[in-house]
Length: 253
Image (tube, rainbow, N blue to C red; front, side):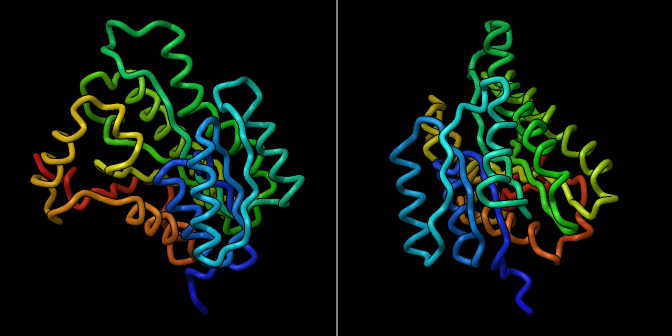
């Protein structure tokens, strides 16, 4: 039996129009999974994901446009997926947004917006999906190094990711008895479209590559590969962890 065969498995990946989301959607679809994905405004990205899945031989995904910032949106997405696909085996919370400003310049609106998308939507979707998950279900959330480190202009996003990681640990404690694992994936610097929002993008990439023991920064495929592993039977005893996918960058002082 191939542990990475996901035939007849149902997967929901939020933020499926981005580079990392696309890599994960494609990886699971190519291995037989029926994929559902969410996106908000990146129609070109959503079309690119559909194309990548088709080229990989996967079935056409269920694409749901939504704004996870909106109250009730996450629960509505969960209900739609249950109605159209049935209970999911794997849920990956990848959608992210936030305000990149110094902490002293953050408004209440900035804070709430970032928390709602990056942390609250993960919990809201889990509350809908987990009760229907079969034993052996897998839940993952994408976090970042900013959850535990201070990064310039990253106060709101970093705080939201720290909240996300804490939520992962508590859900792991609560859902483990049901045979469900809950873990966080923490990519290092990955050259994606999202990184273009950082004014020092080129500097970040150059420094990360120089400091990484593996000699290069991670790619979206690297992240997708770890998601496949955690979703497989091989990872049934990995529970409540934050897994760094950074080539060793985070081990350095």
